Every structure is written in structure tokens, then in C-alpha cells.
Image (cartoon, rainbow over the protein chains, first blue to last red):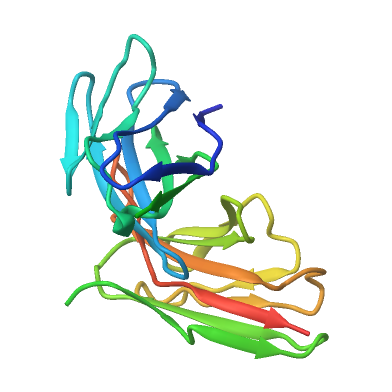
Length: 110
Length: 113
């Protein structure tokens, strides 16, 4: 079946550091890929998405590129802020159901 | 504004009582979902519904029940049979078939003592 694997957290960075959160997937067919962000005590918000190979999703300085050859969708940001502290979920959909990774907690220190 | 509302945000119940969590959407989405999230954990699917008057069990349906009498509404009942009901509950919806993302509500934190 479909699956998503994310790097385990927490990831702790200083403000303005470069961020990478790894995400790899297994899916039948041609999935769409997503990154969601969850701030403390809130629901999940869609951060970015990509629907086909080599697409780059981007939003609020975050980027991720759909790499079919490596089945990856790594999340990156050039300079993180304290306000980026949250849990990040990678997800895919190949049929009717979304499959989520386990989430990666990011903590950014001033 | 279109979106998903969940109420209340915090809910407290005594052990042995059933409790119903509300989820309403005005996005005209066909599919709706309930997830459970425990502290520091990912999402686990409880129930989902692809169409009115139809729903399917997810991975952890035991001790929960749902109904889908209207397109906009998908309430979740946590019954006394659920052994460990204290958790954060998230409702979501999506347009239906197709490779669309899900939209999430703000969540309800249920505490049972």
C-alpha cells in the first residue's frame, strides 16, 4: 500500500538557519504530494503541493520538489524564523485517501 | 468565508458518558473525515464518508460512531466503549474523487476523567 516516511524530529535550529525536512514515499500510480503545517493546538493547514514529477510547490518561503526518480518530496526553507516552529506533515494521495507521514516537529530558537 | 468548523474547541466529560463532537463544512465537499491525534503523534483515521448516508470505518473505529445525514455535517460520537478517549480530534473534508488535498478544521480537544 501507499506510505510516507519522514525524518524523525524534533529538528532544532537557530533563527535564519537553513531547513530541510526529508520525505520519501511509496505509492502506486502517480500521486499528488503535499506538505501540511500544524501550529500548537490547531488543525493542519496546507503549506504547499505538487501534482506531477518535477513540479515545485512553494509558499511562505518554503519549497519542495516532486522527485519521481528518488520518490522524494523534501521540504526546504532558506532562513527559518521562530514563527516557523510547528509540526510538519508530508502526505500523498494516489486514490481516494490521503496517506500521512508521522510528522516532524521543528523548533526554532532566537 | 468557506471552511470547516468544529465545536467546541475544548470538551470535558466524565468517564462512562457518550459525547458528540460537531463538524460542519460549507465548502460543498462530498467527502469528510475524522482523525484522532495523541500528543506528539501523527494522525489516525477513525471514520470517513465519501457521500451522504454512507460512511466507512478507518483504522481505529472501535468505540466511535458517526452519521452523515447532510452533506455539510459529519458528527462523531465517542462512546463509553472507547477505552482511552482523551485526545485531539480533527475533522477534514475534500471535494471527493480526484487527487485533491484535504482541508482541516481547528480541532476539538476532548478530556475524559
